[in-house]
Amino acid sequence: MIWDFEWTWQVMPDLMQGLAVTVQATVFGYLIALVLGLAIAMVRRVPVIGTIVHAVMEFIRTTPLLVQLVFVFALAPSTVSALTVGIVVLGVHYSAYTAEVYRSGIEGVPKGQWEAARALSLPAGRTWGAVVLPQAIRKVIPALGNYLIAMFKDTPLLLAITVTELLATARQVGSAGFRIVEAYTVVGFLFLLVSIPSAILIRRLERRYAAV
Amino acid sequence: MEFLIDRLPLYLGGAWVTVQLTVGGIALAFVLAMFFGVLGTARSGLLRAVSTVYVEVFRGIAALVLMFWMAYALPLLTGFQLDGRFAAILAVGLNVGAYGAEVVRGAINAVPRAQTEATIALDMSWAQRMRLVILPQAWAQMLPTFGNLSIELMKATAVAFLIGVADITAVAEQMRQATGETVLAFSGALILYFLIAQVLIFGVRLLERRANRRLGRTPPGGRGLLALLRPPALTTSGGAK
Image 1 (cartoon, each protein chain N blue to C red):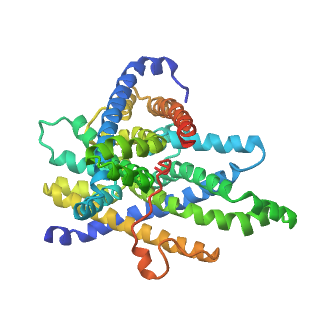
Image 2: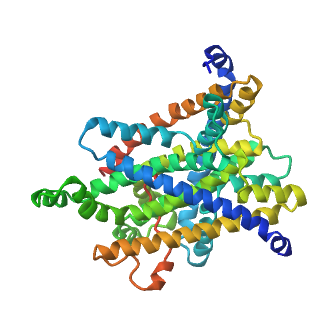
Image 3: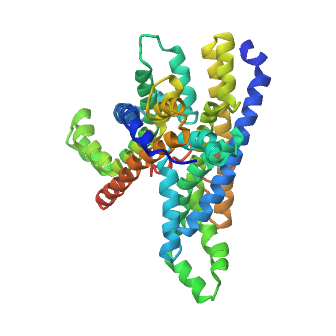
């Protein structure tokens, strides 16, 4: 089997378009995970509701993302696009992870900080916004970054719900041109091309923030 | 409820396939993690580089891409068609093994230096040092993260349905298409996955207790059988994903 470079270059634009969808899903899903995860981590400190939320999140965390995607996609009204469903499910799934990360950060804030906020009679909003969260989040930035990479690598699952992201595009052009090997190998390299530099970046972040 | 009870044999058949994939994947990932993890602590720069290449390549590629490549590209390249199940085990094993290797490397490096120095003073060989002193201590530290990784691996096996393996997800998808009962069909699948995850969590906790006891430490969460029911400790390193 000989590698067909000409064909590879020809389909590059298509694959890049697929990559763009992948990146789009990752970025928006990650934003949901960041915001929702923080909200969950804060709600978990409330007595009864916190326990229920924790149980639900535990269930989401221990069941496969693929099944959740197909499940929600089958239930969603047809007016909602597959990409939207994918982004929301990705975001909610990963918020189960980011919530744990935030929680560890919040628990890492010394008790004295809470007491000082109470002594100054700061309202709850200011206690969280100006005292606890700035310290908690700073410490967990590298861990949060790891989940961005993890999420990027989970986006190929969206092909199961008809989103034409990178892998689905490769499947299409690959089988149309009878060039399966080239198509899937290029996808593998594109993944490495994005995830290895981001891993290096996160290692830098780790070094920068871990020292505090 | 009746819907699920009637179709229980089908679901259990799917669950059996998922268990096979999970156990096979864990076995492969464990061997790879141990080998490349220990390699990553070698003194020779070349050996460490080999370990780094394995970790970065297989951590960087999504398990699904790996699986597609093995199921569809590999037969064209080599003329050798892998069984779907085997391709799935290889893909998840290689992928999770790369994460595991980092955990093993980290745990070995975290064993205090004085322990190594003591084994040198006692004139132990490298194999003795690893087997008797370093690994038992590193093992206790690896286990919690290994537990999380094994759940990640179990979840990753669900994508095998996309290359035509008849696991739980495939059964649920069949049910849905045959009956149109979306909610029930997928709830059954999700519950089965959840149960398998609970078994994994419980098993790893037993191992953790044993490892800590052998080191003369009180297991985290205290003694007694009830301590096994404590909520799982999630590592926040994130790299465990």
